[in-house]
Image 1 (cartoon, rainbow, N blue to C red):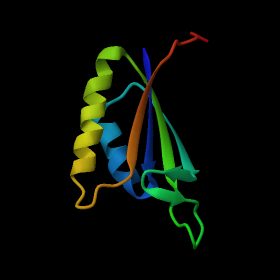
Image 2 (image 1 turned 60 degrees about the vertical axis):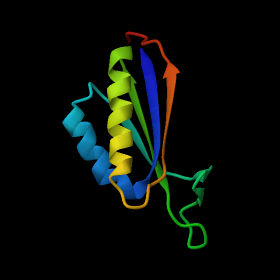
Image 3 (image 1 turned 90 degrees about the horizontal axis):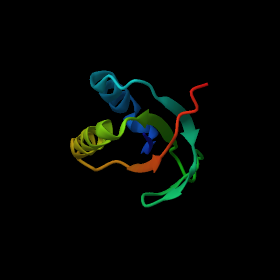
Image 4 (image 1 turned 30 degrees about the vertical axis):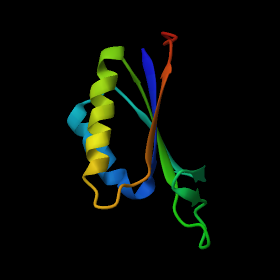
Length: 97
């Protein structure tokens, strides 16, 4: 099992949410309003450094991960100016609780 972490700019949220519906993932968790610094610069949610990110967590079976990553990349390519979207894949064990 893998934990896919997706950090993406808040302006993409409607598109990402629609993609999640289309893919019918077994579950996911989203944190809104994340701030920080990355390849696309500072996002602090302030007038000087506007914008925030959302962070999505999805625990998936190993075989589901490649398709999910491809779908996210295709979504990103659909924008005229590529938005900030970064993925991380980590091994994870479910506790069963």
